[in-house]
Length: 222
Image 1 (cartoon, rainbow, N blue to C red):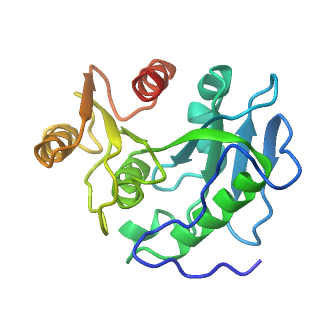
Image 2 (tube, helix red, strand yellow):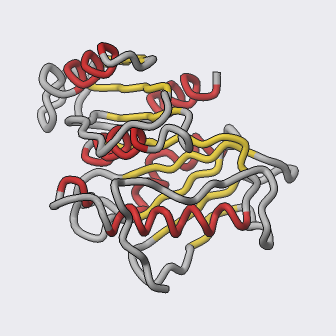
């Protein structure tokens, strides 16, 4: 399918409690978008609206790696997960400007909205994906009630809409994106801008662990 350019980082899709199309099955489904990989993992159990976590991989990653990082923990909590792969080796914001990756994500969200009843949504990511989640999420705070950033490097929103809650985790031994100039600075700047920020600093490196995913979900779903 043709993917239109997305302006100013705004997402048009609005998943809700009453999808119009046939239901997505439990398990992992590949969404055919005619472009980069897009996967959605749907928990089993009774039908009904459920939380949706959209997750962005780190540089050089894939949608499949996103699901490997957060999918098991999230679906065990009854949370569906949507993951797309960036068109280039990292997300468009870091590779020249917002555009095609936003359009891919918007198309994937439209597909999910047609087949999955969604009660609430959060945007998360790791490393470059964490920076992307914070930046894109601040521009779409009317869609995402929470932003979950694992080891982000920066935040550069193209605009600000709504007041999403923010959770950030960063390792004190991160040699890829050092904590002092990344996690600490980003969380401090967002708190100074008036956002509700939870900052979780841990003894570790540049990683996503099941315990961190649990902490992120706890912060969001509380």
